[in-house]
Length: 159
Image (spheres, rainbow, N blue to C red):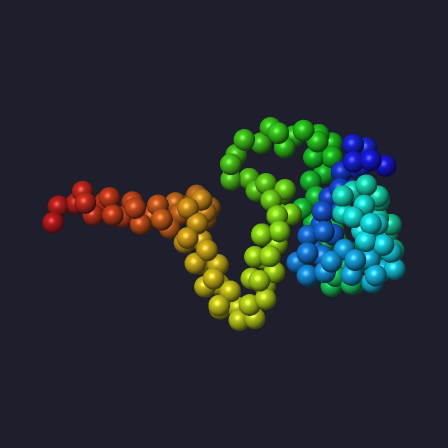
């Protein structure tokens, strides 16, 4: 089976496998050894070239300390029915799932969850939101825009 004929579910499950393996800090070789297969087979699974059987999926879930359902989380059934639907989405606030495979993002997630203190994690998240120019919470302007808007209002108001 080549990538052109890979089923979208196999591709999605493979991406989720890669994402979780990376977050856990495991190499393809280490994961392969844990289930007694080669790292090349792991590569084929992660790229969606080969379909993962249910017993193998169960083994991966056990080793990666997740529920089997994790592999199917965020799967869009409508995308299977219309694979080009994503091209129709013009809303820039829609998360581009392909960025989730970015090593820098996965490293950030791993480091973030490595912070044991929940209060510290919340403060780090708040800091990141404040520093981000693009972050918008619901429909409210980002922190930077709020500060700019407040500064503009103070200039306009009489003293």
